[in-house]
Amino acid sequence: MFRHALPDAGDQNFERDKADRGAEFYPRIQQENKLLLLDVRNDKEFGAWRIESRHSPETLHIPYVVFVEDEEDAVRQVPADREIVVVCAKGGASAYVAEILRRHNTPTTNLGGGMIAWGSHYVFRPVVERDEYQIYQIDRASRGCLSYVLISKGQAAIIDPLRHIGRYRQFLSEIGADLTLVLDTHAHADHISGGSALSEATGVPYYLHPYDAIHPLDMLPPRIRFEMLQDGQSFTLGDLTIRILHTPGHTLGQVNLLVTGSAGQSYFFSGDNLFLLSLGRPDLGGLSKAWAPLVYETIFGIIKETVPPQALVLPGHYASFAEANAAGLYGKPLADVWQENPSLQMTGKEEFVEHILSHLPEMPPQYAEIKRVNIGLSAASEQEANELELGKNVCALE
Image (cartoon, helix red, strand yellow):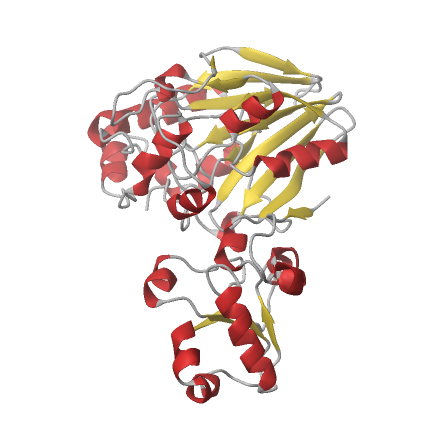
């Protein structure tokens, strides 16, 4: 099972261009291709965020205004012997440019919905599909964000749901499962969580560790309803057992989930503290020197002593498309992660902490506001949410 979920139409070009949207575009750029992506956004927008994939197409940047001011000169800059896909912010300007290029006999399609549609494109892929239970990884490819749906005996749990909650509800409706549990591994900073909204829409309890319900910079309490997670807590979902491990470091309230099947198979949902080839940054609360040692204690203490080596690590993010296997899945046995993750080769605490502190990327200013939204201290319209979530996540060390 491999499916795509697309955003609702929001611009006038949707009906004309919907066939060119992510459902067709995404698979093409997951394999070798000869596409030329013509990005017609302005310099600032183009510099902030681009379309990337396992096989990123060659990209040519010619701002829309160039086509408006001197159409002939702009067209001359575009190869006539390549298949062109034009992209802009919302799909309108790119539709205009695509029509110009078609008039000049250049094979061209428009990425309807533009970067807004690309940013809202979701892919559902199976992790495991057994008679007793199924686990699906949901990939928001534009941001490198991963969430998960667990299903057993008609019951479903969602881990780290992203903000477009209709995707999950539609998926569960199609598969015939009832949502009974919603969990966030932590209060996210890089994207707006769908956890609280799912709970409000369905009446299903939403779980979060209480340490993360307090804004780490404002020190203000939450204005959302949630159930408190605690270390050692467990849930039963059909034939699956979900065990909560409090794993501070990326945030003080970060938890990981150790999920065990009825036959003993183990799945480790590592949130934002352990990635396949990196680690989660500990500075989002402004206390990197205090929290970095917690990362060491979590990784080399809690995880190493608790999680079986054969458990499949399923992270909350990825930094590179190269981390996926041939099927596009982001996941590896913990034993492989111990051997392949460069950050795990430093076993001494002092060296490890120094490594973390010297590899912290710049924190985007919008992350503080996203955290406010995620605990109900502020609200964001659809346009504001798109602006807050602009670009890929930078939750991992550089």
